Length: 62
Figure 1: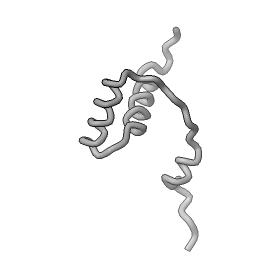
Figure 2: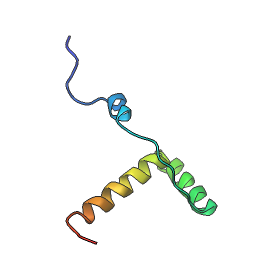
Figure 3: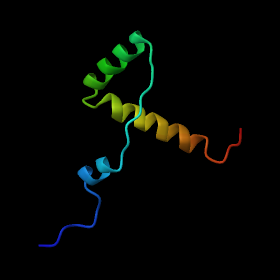
Figure 4: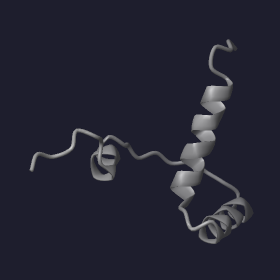
């Protein structure tokens, strides 16, 4: 059976790059706690927040 042409989670992860950011210790702790409560990851939360911000600010100029 041929493989599906839809992107698999593994192939999507291969397109990602590492970055780093600095957060206050308290903020990171709260973020990790919320990720656990929501059964998700800090990475996923941040990625969704950034995507939302970019969509909201699309077309705006500095």
